[in-house]
Length: 259
Length: 345
Figure (cartoon, rainbow over the protein chains, first blue to last red):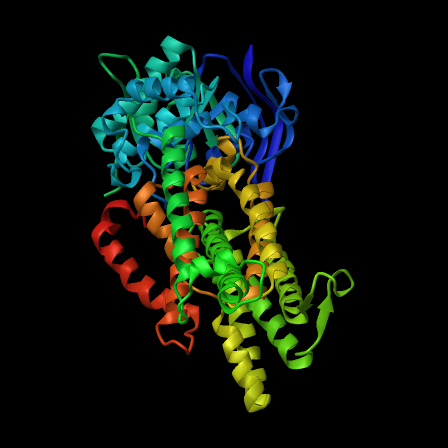
């Protein structure tokens, strides 16, 4: 079954076109990394998938038109991890994670035992249970991102969308996030689509890569197929050398500055 | 994992409710004139000074104070959530300015008109609150219109248009104040400073009904308010339609603020301070924060108004002076002690 399918999807912010005719399908249980320079449309595409923006052209979620879902149903299908969570009010990490359960209980009710259990399991899975009772804004970037992933998991989604989930993390936490995604994909069959900026990590962890450029899908396929010196030069405008990692056989970039 | 449960909800609100009832009783007894309660109660149905003071002066005023304090605090809570800004307060929304201007025009142009209710059998109410409420409605529509883009209220524009409308109205009020005669100017100033003095149970009943309905409605949006404080996109991801929520909450809060300012003028500080203090003490979950702030706001304004009545007795201080004078330092103290830990700014 297809988790997401788009047909000739177009989107523009006012008169500025951002996506041109994106046709794409992602099967259930796939793990897809999206690469591309800033402004290539990665974030916009994720926002259309999660129902925040509405484009022109067809978007089908689980073989049904996206328009046929209401906001609550969408939030039980999709969970989104944003680049950086900005929270102006003092909430504890546990409170933030429990908000992931909002679409499962009545807006007038408090969370029940099952909701608490799901939240606890999600925090356990992301190693964030230790700071459940601390305020979110007191946590480090890495801890915060784990809480946000825990909230996404508490939504019990079928599809997880991530927008540069490791942008503000140090190396260790970047690797941890990707290892967690890989585990969730393998053990729970979670469909994962992530916009990424680190090409090398994307090649290492994601079996399918999508390269966006100027609002179009430039390349789509396994890392070995799509990551070539020519593609990188076309898309990012920089010259690189590509070698294959001796252990995993994945393509990795070596930068060659002009100087 | 400490999160909101029914026990905490009942305990916190129960404790505050008991405190509110005790405060209301104490504030009814306190005042510039000593009140003989047993005499007042034993001669409840005959005309005497004690009963008169209790039922005609003190009780409606205390009841009004609780409604206004609670309403202002609850509106402060939801506006802070709506605007994503912990510094927002009811006075920032152009509505309070509009109500002030409406009230002032009422004072200038028809100071002595009275509107009989049910042919005069239920008493008469002044046109001034009605004019003020009309001003509030007009400015609400204006601010709403200026902040609506693509079916969503834009928090930034909401804040900005409210503040700008308020300063524009302030200029108009200053202008009016300088062209009217001395006695009228005194009246305007007194109205602007806000007061809870009332003798009409009709007004008190009207405000209570209004505030109660508005508050219950806002409380039912508690969970959605939690989600909208995370940002519009995050709220959508978690199942809330932000456009609808923002519109409904803005209109509900504006109507409440408009009604309150119409009756008591602009009583500042309650709507900013009480939500903050409660956030520091009990956290940000709006399902608890809203009722707790309502009760705490009622307690706070009840005492502030009592101080306003007795500090310079027999003269009376504008209650806004008391709220700011005592609230300000207390707030700064709390900010200093707790702020770094639990303010997310």
